[in-house]
Image (cartoon, rainbow, N blue to C red):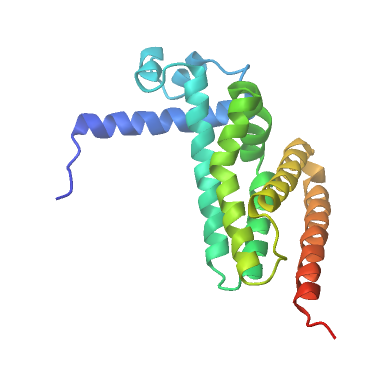
Length: 210
């Protein structure tokens, strides 16, 4: 049977969501160093104690913001891929959605620019692998199984493509708003050439010898 939440539980969840919304705006606009827990609490007319009720410290609050952004991004990318039955169409749709996400100023600023500062490089890398690597490996594996990519070590191939996409994410996050369309097109073109070369290699390997 569904559990009916008490009014207190509902209020607690609403407060947590409001804190995350306010913190997301603050971290995107002012960065991790330029945001205080008092700022976040003030934005929703709450007390500092209300923040500590949900988050142990500013880093914990940032991590929650980061995870929510990444979970939403991965969901959208996976949905874009799932809309296609053909592995290549699925991979291209996922790539396009990923580049779109990286052009978003909030996602780019928080995930690609502030997260390495707030979480530390090692922890940030762990989180990136947690949210992004699995989907890349899944798509690469499906392409290999369908003959769209040549047979090669799955983990090595997935990690190379994962880091290529990461380079695009970093570049798009750092690009001025006026340049994002151009930078997105350039990285999309380069990534397209890389995967097209692999596809041609697979097609050449599949041809019978004469």
